Each structure stands twice: as structure tokens, then as C-alpha cells.
Amino acid sequence: KSIHSRANWSSDSESDSSGSECLYRVVLLGDHGVGKSSLANIFAGIQEKDAHKHIGEDTYERTLTVDGEETTLVVMDTWETEKQEEDEKWVQDYCMQVGNAYVIVYSITDRSSFESASELRIQLRRIRQAENIPIILVGNKSDLVRSREVAVEEGRACAVVFDCKFIETSASLHHNVHELFEGIVRQIRLRKDSKEI
Ligand code: GDP
Ligand code: MG
Image (cartoon, rainbow, N blue to C red; front, side, top):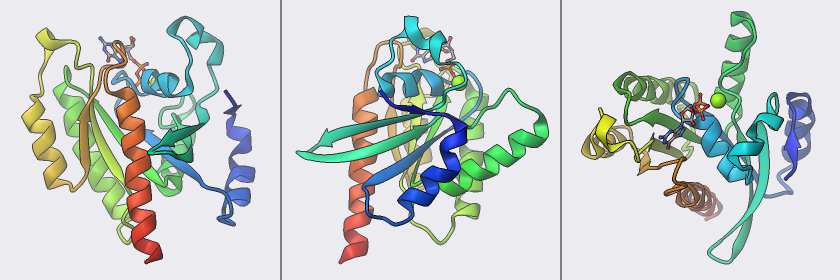
């Protein structure tokens, strides 16, 4: 329901750096057209027909109850901008720095987006090397069986190599999308619990 604009970024990071609130930033990464915004909109509960009303708004906050416990996720669909190249570089650097968890999306119908996903994983590992941040590799558009270019086994194998979780989703059919966000919450909790011990 509550949607923040980019203008809120700085105040967001100030207020939650105290750690008093259980709020986690989940950044969506991946090539253009793989379905990042569709997944973000489902997370936010926005119907496809309303999606055009939210142009320019790309950060969504929602509290999920997973295993009987509440966790607030702020999903950032900010990887792509319509702005100048210079701004894009700044925004992408920012995205790589601020996530508490990452969703790397490719389309199962687009092999080059699968290759980009590997590159993004490598980039992320380089930038955030000391941290054990949750990363989920997502093969989206699983409904498009006849245009499939990347096998499920390839996605799964890639996730093993890159030490992250893997799920195939269909934003169109809403298949596995809630499972994806619940999975992120569980991954975040696992990391958090192991730190506290
Ligand atoms: P983004 O560029 O990564 O934000 O991708 P979008 O969410 O804008 O989606 C790009 C296009 O792919 C749109 O036309 C979507 O309707 C379509 N799309 C997204 N997810 C799916 C999916 O799971 N299945 C199918 N068939 N189309 C999808
Ligand atoms: Mg988009």
C-alpha cells in the first residue's frame, strides 16, 4: 500500500540504520523485460490494470506474516531507470550497496538474460564480498513453456555454483511469486539468527 519515491531514500536509510525496526530492503536485479516490475507489482498487490498509475514509483513496502511472524520488506524495483547513463550508473551502484537481500531475475525464454544474471551475481559478490547476504536466482516466465531457452536444471545448477537459492516463477499466472517473497523472509531470518548466536 505505501509506496515510496526515490526522494525518500536518504531518510529511509537514516531511520533504519538504528536497527530498531525489522525492515529489510530487497533489491530486484536483472535485464530489461525479464519481469522485475511485474513481480514487484504482485508483491505490492497492484493489479495489472492499475500498474500504469504507478509509473515513477518503484519502491514498495509490505509486511508479510511468514511462519507466524511478521517481517517488513521494502522491495526496490530501481535497477532500471529512464534517465541518463550517468544517473543509471549512480543508481545501480546504490542498488548494489543498499540491499539486505537480492533477487536476480532472468527470463527462461531469454538465454542472454540468464547470462546477465550470472554476471550480476559475480558483480554482487565482488561489491559485497564480506557479507553473507541472501540472494535468490529467479527464472521468470515459466508459463511460456514453448519459448523456453533455459532449462530448469540449468537454473538450479547455476544457483548451486553461485551459492544462492533458486525458484522458477510466472508473474503472469502468479505462480510461485508469494513463495519467492516468503523464501526471502526465511533467508533473511536464517542469516539474522546465525549472527545473534
Ligand atoms: P522488467 O523490465 O524486468 O521490469 O519487466 P516487466 O515486468 O516490465 O515485464 C516485461 C514484459 O514481460 C511485460 O510485457 C510483462 O507483461 C511480461 N511478463 C512479465 N512476467 C511474465 C511472466 O511470468 N509470463 C509472461 N508470459 N509474461 C511476463
Ligand atoms: Mg521494470
